[in-house]
Amino acid sequence: MSAERGQATIELVAFAMVAALVAVGLQAVLIAWAAQGRAQGIADQASVLVAEGRPVPADLRRGAEIRVRGRTLIVRLPVPLAGGLARTTAVARAALP
Image (cartoon, rainbow, N blue to C red; front, side):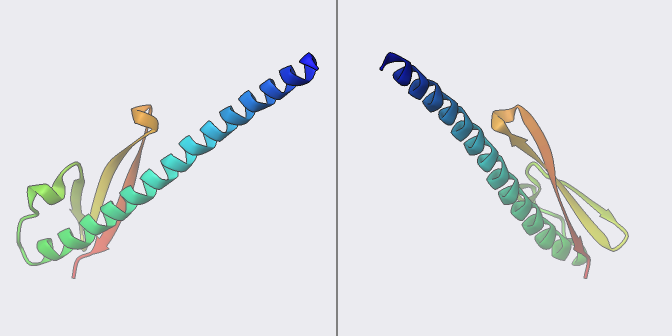
């Protein structure tokens, strides 16, 4: 009976570790997806402002790098993942009208 309980404990711990890894991975995907949406929103709004010759407000720029190349506005937004242990960048483009 003791061996069966030990095996069940090992299986439970292994399952908990796999579940934690899946949760961290899912969180990273959701954070990156939200950042991509924010980057695209910034690109869309900033492209209209730039086309009208108006400055991009600081609150829209917050944390984002905005550049114009030709007729394309490019937004790069750093995205911290896994509590800051990893990083990626969301990139969005918008054509200038």
